[in-house]
Length: 262
Ligand code: MN3
Image (tube, rainbow, N blue to C red):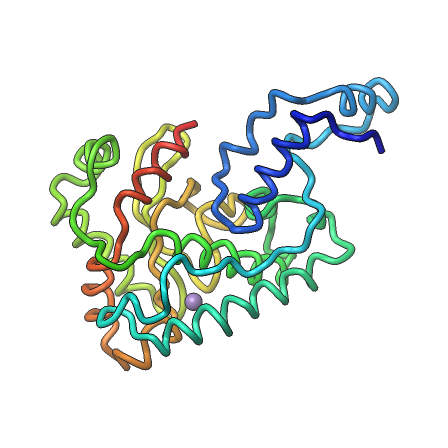
């Protein structure tokens, strides 16, 4: 394999880091200006071989660190829930994802590309890849001293899609409350740049175009598995959802919105 040029390598490392932390958004993989000598050689050498439109991943997935202490989200999300949720549940998804990927066509794909290509036949990759993607997003869009209101372009787009913030809050909360059993509620951006609310069972997410009804790039998600709230809220899922609004980091959600527009 040819040694990558400096620029290729830098881009590769940047992309790899994003994938590893699970923060990458789909558009990053969509355009690849440095499609390059190696791939062109491939094309001339083998007509039927299609070069991937993403940088191949060479490292196993790892558990991203939390960007705040485990107790920092109290009283909205308690310390023990954070310890177990991040250190046990999320870590388990990462471990099982790496095992499930072994020998599959997904083995060298970035996480968001895996999400876009997974199907109902790929149970282990679907469940554990979704678990890794969803939780990586979840930790990133919540923070201590957060809450408040969306601003800027996101705020404008939310008004267009949902009306007032309270209208949005009601619709998002309803999606989270009415998800039967385990799953997630999402705020996502569709191909036209329009926001929508949806919910998915288990560890599915809106990137899974072969599986979900409404396809888009998720920019905010709430985990409504019982493991996300039961220690503190027991059966009171509605209280957990209401308090989740106290920890939403709207600046992060806004950055994800802008990135999703490419
Ligand atoms: Mn969870």
